[in-house]
Length: 350
Image (cartoon, rainbow, N blue to C red):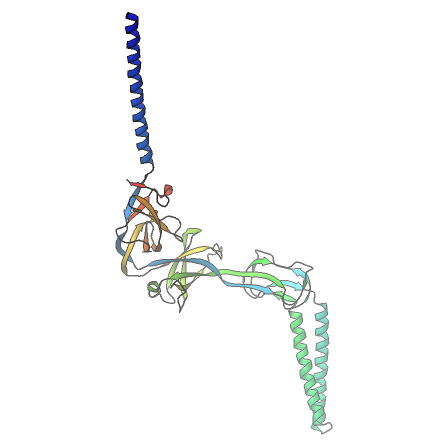
């Protein structure tokens, strides 16, 4: 009898323990489900698009281009005997670059000089004879034509010989070389690419409101994105008379390079146009921008979800960005936490 009672008690205890374990398991599952639901919402900090006063000063971006750049072509034919300048070398205008074999041209010049001298003397003799009516006017005219013809042949021979000495038409740096000693040239053969980066031009885009604030000759502060700590002085040299399809105007800024020519053609640069006036602007913290300043977007928070939107930016300061298009005042924009966001993801505001 006692044994039966013990068995019943043990079964009852086991039942209570089992029920308790099942209850705890359900509670743990419920908590896990809640945690999983909460984990779907990514925590972010938000800010609002605010209207504020901003200097009418503005920045514009573009690429540096050389003030002079050309591909040097051959004007003669013949075999190259000397190449004096290589890629990367600095050259001055008029400096010898290539010497072409010139024996034939030198011989042609000597012949042309002899013929021209003979024709000159013949003309002098014929003029003396004509003064005494010893020859006809036709003979005198033929002598004059022969003198002019041989003189023209002499000039042409000199030019052909001079063209065997190929010199630099501009000062600059050899960016590419296309010939070697022994190469045979024909008229039109490519010889060198020469780039002058002592001065560069930065062509930037200005909106219709910005272009009215600048004039030709204005001084501009210029920086290269690759070396933002160094500033260069630029001068506005040209302003487009017509806007492009995006209603932007090309503004050309001439920039004097540093002594070591550390600015290179093709680098990305920013021009700062200082204007002593203020205007209304929509501002966001710079950290709210997703992507680059050249291709910016922001995440808006709507109905607890993230929504990516393209924006157009204007003036960029150290910690703020002017928003020209894409968002409206009062809209909620993610300021931090964007790294984990994507379109439509749930967010929780910190």
